[in-house]
Length: 252
Image (cartoon, rainbow, N blue to C red; front, side, top):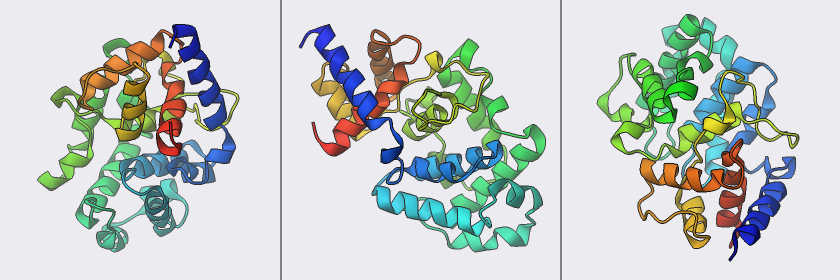
């Protein structure tokens, strides 16, 4: 396959999958319920955090979290007292359990009280790169008391984690185009500096297309893939996540 042929495939599939018709079965459907920036951030972050496994289960459990927050995540976090978090101890999504959920909500509450949002915690992304920025966010997030087991749910790219879910969340918040799927509500971060989310589906397609040669789905692989995609669109390489994931899930 020539470079021109590969470009045509990526562009065609990006356009095909990056449209509102594909929102309902995807975890991004949860933040699309909201208009306020903080509600989008909080519901999006929690939805991305549990985004592994069966997509129907992901969406159902993410919707349940939002409903338990009275369908107003930001207001809930600002006003919640310790007893208001107790129902979340019964939450379970695969290995993400009630203790993890309680920690995440408590950490988010502290962050929103101190920083008024998540965007400031990723402010180093443009200058120092996504690995440093994500690690900086991780350090702030983990400054809230937590069980050791909960740390596995926050990506650590400096330790080699591919960071699929946090990179997907960053794509949602930063990217903006005319299709209306990603939100583009964070204006301080250049979408050219994002890295492409990588999972078993997108990795398989990327290797089949010759965009990725590293066998392990780790941080080095995400960088290799993103650099390959920059050849086709250096200003917005992660837009091809739509193409790779879509082809991976729906067959290629």
